[in-house]
Amino acid sequence: MSVVAIHFYIKAARLSQEFEDQIGSRLINIDTVTHDVIVKPIHSHNDEWRRHPLVDALKVGANSVEADCFYFPNDPDTIYVGHNTAFLNKERNVDSLYLDHLYDMLERANAKNDTSRKNGIFYTSPETTTYFYIDIKTKGEELLEALNKKVERFLARGYLTTYDSEKDEIREGPLTIIITGNYPYNYISSQKLRYAFIDAPLKDLVDPEKARLYPAGKISIFSSASLSELTGSHKARSLFSGLSTHQLADIEKYISAAHKVGLKTRIWDTPKFTKSIKHTVWKQIIALGSDYLNADELKEAVSI
Image (cartoon, rainbow, N blue to C red; front, side, top):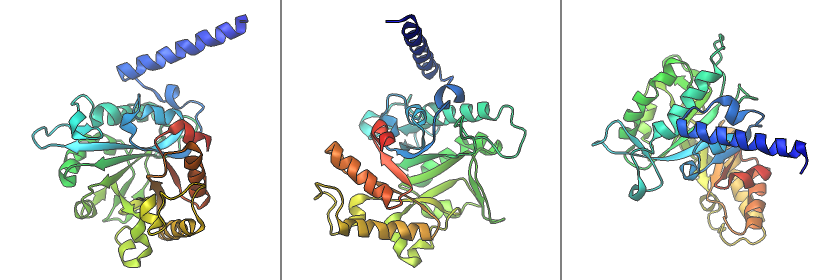
């Protein structure tokens, strides 16, 4: 091995160790995580399962992450993060895994910023917002009441996308919070200053009356549905060479309806096997104009 190659590997190992040390000490900075990263419209589904929640997604350029969240009134200061109640751990919470990291990175990104427009957390694309999805698994209103206190620091610094219903004013910030799962529609829609936006039901948007419930930028920014919801009688599971003509037509109808009312789209629960079928379906969904690719396998999604 040449001297140059040895030097390269030593440097790579040192940087890798520095990164691991930062993860452990929670001193993650924008330079380490997003330097030279190109932002990609990829949604990190079940992000809390990753070795480094949030960070693994940001490192590949995915600017949308989703965490399953639980709230229990007998532990009022904690919003737990996990896929099911059996394995919840008080140490793995929305602050330690997400909000603390995001706030610290935003502070670093804006340390020398004296303009009203706040920088985002991507080093090469500071104008880009990051979407943080909270998939509520318990009572929605209770969880959001707890979340209100946790995001006060973000609101005070102008870091969150907000809608002021009294001024009818939408302001995009470097961090946009999306609520999915057990979202409390009436609670969110009644807020004068909204910082949490509902993940609208994509399938409902073909109905003009239902679509009016999710005005773009005011109640919702994104819409989503499972692949099987959108294909209806044309079962999504019966595919071997990708989506059929009928399935594609069904999906395109819903995507068009969402775009017509100004909402972005995301389609989840796509085939997981085989890799070939999975990639074919992903490419077909992208070709139809869906805005974000829902992915459990980030490296595969980046390669599409």
